[in-house]
Every structure is written in C-alpha cells, then in structure tokens.
Amino acid sequence: MSNGNKYVGEFKDSMMHGQGTFYFHGNDKFKGDRYVGEFKDDKRHGQGTYISSNGGKFIGEFKDGQRNGQGTHTYADGNKYIGEYKDNNINGQGTYTWANGDRDVGEFKDGKLSGRGIKYSANGTIAESGIYQNDVLVTSQFIDPNSFARTTHSASYIGRLRAKIKPNITFSDSLLKAVEGNPSAEVEVTCSPSGKIESATLIKSSGSSDWDQAALNAVRKTEALPRDIDGNIPSRLVFSFRPRD
Image 1 (tube, helix red, strand yellow):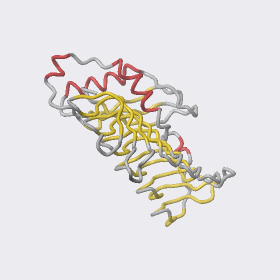
Image 2 (image 1 turned 120 degrees about the vertical axis):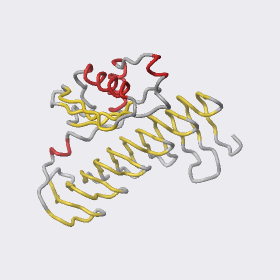
Image 3 (image 1 turned 180 degrees about the horizontal axis):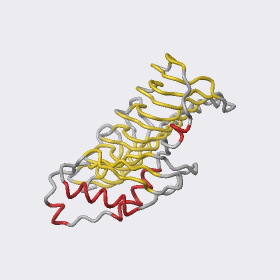
Image 4 (image 1 turned 90 degrees about the vertical axis):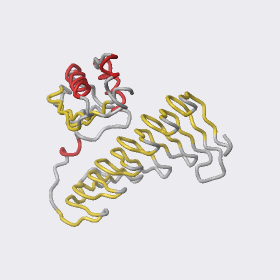
C-alpha cells in the first residue's frame, strides 16, 4: 500500500473481504498496530482482534470499521472492559474492571456509567449502586447484581453461538435469490440457567418473511446454548442473522 500499511488475506472485487491481517506501518498514531479478523468491503467487519503497539488488545465485533457489538478490551495499563460497544465506544451493558481490582458494572454511555450501575471495591463488596450520569451517582438505590450478571458475556461467546446455530439454518438458493441485498433479521433469545432456549422472538424484520422464519427456526432447532468461558449463560441475547454472511 502507498501509505506503508500491509494487508495479507482474502479479497473480493479488489477489496479486503473475508479473513485477513492488516498491519499499520504508516507514520501516524496507529503505527505498529495490527488487526486480525474479518473484513467486508475494505473495512473491519465481523469478529476480529485489534492489537495496539502499546500492549492493549480488543477482541470482539466490528461493523463498518468500528467496534460495534460485544467486545473485550484489555488496556495497556491493566484495566479491562467486557461488554457492549456502539459507534467505536463503550455503549450498553458491561463490566469495567480497574487494575486495582475495583469494578463498575452496569449501563454505559460513551465510556462512562450512565444508567443503572453498581460499583464494587476490590474485595468484592458493593461500594455504591443506583442511577449514574457520566460516572456520577445521581440517585442512590439498591440494584440487584443478578440483573447484570447473566446478561454480559465474553467477546468470543457470540461467535461460538453463531457457529452452533448456523448449521441449523435452512434456506434454499431460490429463496436467497428473492432477497434483495443482505438484510439483517434480529432475534431475541431468552435462556434458562441451564442454557435451554426458552423463547426466540423476532425483534427486527429483515424485510423477508422467509429469511425471518429461517432465522427463528434455526434458533429454536438449536434448543440449548453452551456456557461462556466463565461458566455462566446469559439470560438474554440478541442475534443478527444475514442471508449472505
């Protein structure tokens, strides 16, 4: 590449597309960084790992070149965040663990606790809980820790679940030809503590009733989900299914 960067991987229509590794060799703040994972139309898109030259590492989901979805970010200073991202920033539900062992668990907006949250001391005791705005406790109240514990998951978990569900998708070539573009059907799944799927609900249509039904049927056929790396099973998950992925 003319800017000194390097890409090794798959292409489609002369664009980075599929699995690959991108090395940042240019003379800017990203020099020495690298990304290993999925690409689509010249952008990071799908599951991937971004390794910073300073020792930081992000493992998770990307969309249109940005962190979007579930992710785990281990920072160079020892801090760590596991949870949801949107628009390349910490947005949604997650757990931020400080290098000293303190933890912030709850709802985040632009990297700060904003909404329901719990702050834990390093010894595991609750320091405070309630409603936060920009990391500041504005209303003190009891928050049930279990309301968060079963809905967060590691960055690799969604990829493992997709790999388990995908073989159950049945969608013929003739039906695929009738679908315009690559629309997403979003399915909300609730699970019992044992991992048994209790419900699967379409919360966003792809615009194709056939693909929507295929996605729902695949989840229901799966019946049960495996445990995450910490032994837990989230009580609620949202999956996005695209017919041409």
